[in-house]
Length: 253
Image (cartoon, rainbow, N blue to C red; front, top):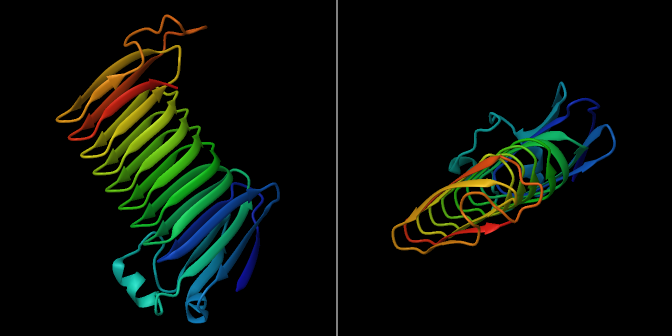
């Protein structure tokens, strides 16, 4: 295992780019970024951890940041040995995580989050105090709270967000989409065979356009103004749902 420590007192950023294994990120109240790299000795030796201004980058030697291919996973797997990268960053740091098959977990408060993966799952326990952007092929994604906008693109992974304060835009081919509470002005969800469930905050005028070829359409929320909401405002939330064989359901958050 190798340990790295960097002084990152202002607007800290973290970039991790590994082929497979596990990525664990947590935030803390200090002004340092700490990174631990564990795994096969040769694989650890091929991993560079360096500071570039306020940014700490973890990546394989000779590979450009954010560029990952199937070839990388094949060359650096060393008989299926995997890397484990753990990082502690200051609260409200920005994080960019890129992997072919590593599972990713985030605990704490980030100011922004961007992830790209082929089959790794993503779990965010805490808050993204800004925008979150997730791209995955077959990995599942679960997020607690996104203060800004949420954008997710997935092929077969399931997507769930507990709370989105901004707008939400989710596209999936066969995975299910569940947005428990959307507070922003727009929520758009598309899936071919997955089910879609969107929870809308009370006190909103709802503009809904949803359709499904063979799935069921259901709304537990009165379309138009919500007369039962206390302190209802004039904010309109636009909800767009489209699925081919999955069900679409609109509920009150």
